[in-house]
Amino acid sequence: MPVSILKQREYLIASVQSALTDTEVIELRDALLSEVAKHRARGVIVDVAALDVIDSFVSRSLSTVARTNRLRGAKTVVVGIQPDVAAAMSQFGLTLDSIDTALDLEAGLELLDG
Amino acid sequence: MIEDFDATTESGPQGPDVGPALLGELVAHLRKVRPALREEWTRRITDAQLLSVMTPEEIFSEVTAVYDNYVDALETGSVEALEAYAKNLSERIIPRGVETHEVLGVVLLLRDVLARSLFEKYQNDSHLLNRVLDAYEPAANRIAVTVGVSFVQERERIIRQQQLAIRELSTPVLKVRDQLLILPIIGALDTGRARQLTEQLLHGIRENRAKVVVIDITGVPAIDMPVADHLVQAVRASGLMGARVIITGLSAEIAQTLVNLGVDLSMMQSVGDLQGGIEEAERQLSYAVTRTAEGVREPEA
Image (cartoon, rainbow over all chains, first blue to last red; front, side, top):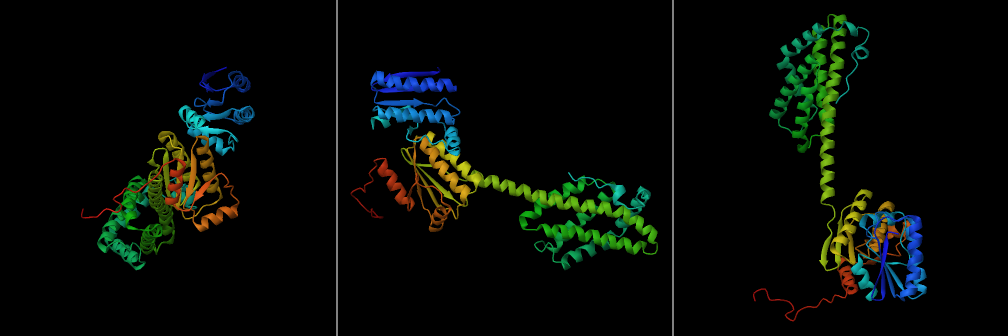
């Protein structure tokens, strides 16, 4: 899976390195859910700066992760959505309901510290 | 490029008989009576009040040039030189406000003037007159089309150039404080401009690491459904990049339009005017603006 999940203080940082297949998206989702429990993380940051496309499956999976993690006491922030990707997503109505977003990793950490 | 008129269909039953000799005779005639016809043409242009923005001297000098080019085009059958001249002429007269109908009118007048002169010369021999007209008409029409098209193409080129210029100076994205951008939108929004605006906004957010953006639409006269949708999309996309958008300066008409169109504005925060919008943004970013102790400074101090 082209995603590395790192633990930083009480947060998990998943940075996506390249485009994901649907299977890899599911793996990422499951990994994030189990890692949160293992490390007792209070926040999860998913960095998607390397993605040129975010389709409905990816955004739905991210929404699922966010909602599930919230039930277990962790906040999810998606960071690094590129301008063109953001424009395309809003055009197709993919709005990442119930997920916090931030410009980049730094802004995401700030948001969680907030 | 102007498509060639088909000589055989245009020139009637006697088309094939129209030889170069006849055309040569016609051209020689038009060269001979040049001074009289040129003056006749100028008179009719003035009578019809065409080219009213030009002085009589200018009209006369252009008339001479066009007349010679016209006869040359008749003689050689090639409209290239005339096309170049018409393009050059258009470049000179369009900025002075010469209209399309004037240019077409002038060229058609010349066609009429020349035709009248041919009628007069050959009036005793209707058979020959027919053949002369067979030679003359298609060439004359082709010339009229060439000049008209050159003029219109030049106009279109200018319009395209202006559109490009307008688009370039379209929408500045300005940073007023750390993490705070303003986007003043002036002038009518169409879908193309709204799309461009979204693009500039999103790149501006990334470059300036903005958290709040104030979009001021005081200068926008009206908004329709597609443009409203685009604005909503721009706001959502900004949200995806972690920036909140505050819209300011919605006029009563625009606000009413948006409500009547049923645009979903729940995710848009809006404040009455730009000042209010900036104050709200500063509040969200925890800026406090205070006046210094001096207060209003004395101009002489």
